[in-house]
Length: 290
Ligand code: PAF
Image (cartoon, rainbow, N blue to C red; front, top):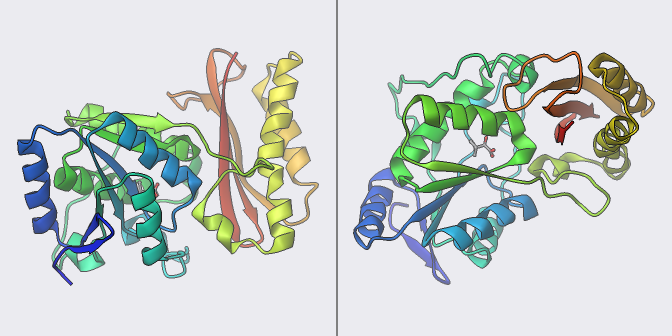
């Protein structure tokens, strides 16, 4: 399907050429463009980004593209939850005017060969656990930026390393846009919102609270004067492993946004967690100013 279809006002476009035509028309009208790239299965976290984009710019574009390049072998690319009709309705209610939903062949046609790599920041945390992941993210986001030409692009703090890497990419490559990072949106019990929460069985959903509770424990310990990062990591680890459904991928404390090892809680630091709950890998983080 190449023609734009209209679902109560929002336009849904699959083809890059058509996106570029609309984008130039919007720009000729002197409107600013806000952009929210997503992989779909939208939740309140995404909708918060979209509402923020609607508040700050004249014309909001979102994209839904489950990007095969950022998934490793054996990861959940095939199973990643998808519900386009519901996503389009939700995006429209959050102020999105144009939704870009390209197919894999439209984004990566046969013979596609260019990737974007950001050095230093991508060899730790999720970059270490998921080799090639950030190359996939930076490559697709560069393509999306070139197609949408946003004035401001919006990303969630839940993917803190992704946001840091994308800001570095935009600065290093002189990209002509601003990147705005929006705070983590949580369920009422503290679980950070994620499309992958859908994978959790009821008992796992309860067990998943070890991430946000582990971060809260760290915040309290720091509040009570704890400063040594190795001790704090041990405390968080010991707390998480008491949950039998949890398997730690990493518990890290790094400087923020430099993502450098630090012995002491000093200045701005990020406490970042990746934990498997059953087969589902969840991440969460907290930035503290000490
Ligand atoms: O955060 C995501 O959902 C994805 O990594 C992004 C930025 C849409 C790129 O595929």
